[in-house]
Image (tube, rainbow, N blue to C red; front, side):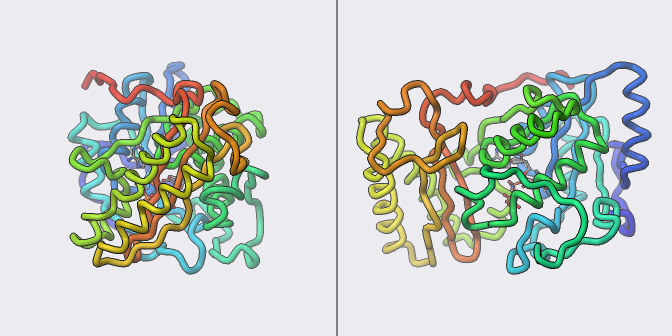
Amino acid sequence: MSSLKLPESTIPLLTNPTSCREWRQQIRGDHKSVGFVATMGALHAGHLSLVRHSKQANDKTVVSIFVNPAQFAPHEDLSAYPRTIEQDLRGLEEIGGVDAVFLPGVKDMYPFGIVQDVEQQRGTFVEVKGYGSEMEGRSRPSFFRGVATVVTKLFNVVEPTRVYFGQKDIQQALLLRRMCSDLLLSHPEPRNLHIVPTERDRTDNLALSSRNAYLSSEERKVANALYRALSLAKGVWETGLSKSECVARSRGFVESVRDNAGVEMRLDYIELNDSDSLEVVGDDKTKVDYGTRPVLLSGALWVGRTRLIDNLILGDPALLGILDSHVEVKV
Ligand SMILES: Nc1ncnc2c1ncn2[C@@H]1O[C@H](COP(=O)(O)OP(=O)(O)OP(=O)(O)O)[C@@H](O)[C@H]1O
Ligand SMILES: CC(C)(CO)[C@@H](O)C(=O)[O-]
Ligand code: BAL
């Protein structure tokens, strides 16, 4: 962000790690808690829900906006990713503001530069073995390496007391919590990584996502097919049928929507995974096999050129530390 002209804002804008560290240093003296929400911008009500949770539980809240090149594969949408900084700041101001927004540039976060091709990369990267290969990792093999690396850097600069990630990206949140444990992080401690429920469109339950902005009006009409397929699979699981039955029926549902959609749709995956290990649930397993252990039911669907993800928890979300959705914030 450093080379661009910054918009006017009532919120302090910290454009590099040095200014962010100076801001953090002042807070440290007062022993105040710092809540942190990491984003790639193009903020919507899902992001604002994370911010509300942070504001409710912490003395100070900082939001970062950084479109991280390392988590985009060379063929993915890095250059097209929506960048709406003025609107983002207005959105934060409308909910009463935050104490700072951290807006680093690529050079600030990657002082030696960054290329998207993993084979060409040099230097230090963070990989959470075993957590990043299933679900989203199958389709986006270097995605979580990029996420874990940038989030480690952000945590190092912001030194947050508590952090907030969205359930919409459930694998990301669980992987980052595991990373905090593995790396013995104290900012944040793993128990202070909170997961906030997915915020959805009130009319058709489509999970809010910055990438929804890519959808044409025709595509938008069928974009909730993934949510509906996951809900169907959840119902099937609750009746005691096997995982393969859940997946087959939800796939069948997506195919029937696709056949009448008039827009291109392609199911990337629908899968059930163990919420501890993230391993794929066996085809013949049922609800009885899992007892009280939550299971992740997740999927990804291409609608036109937009890749949408969503998930539901089978079992009690509180066992994964997923917070309640509603918070009152003093502004
Ligand atoms: N609908 C949502 N409800 C709750 N949290 C969300 C929602 N969408 C995104 N988040 C969370 O906001 C944080 C920042 O996400 P990000 O900036 O990538 O937005 P996004 O909408 O997920 O964008 P993308 O379209 O790239 O997936 C993440 O922790 C993410 O899980
Ligand atoms: C956590 C994150 C900000 C890291 O770039 C990103 O993956 C996101 O927005 O979910
Ligand atoms: N919310 C996940 C960010 C990404 O898809 O790159």
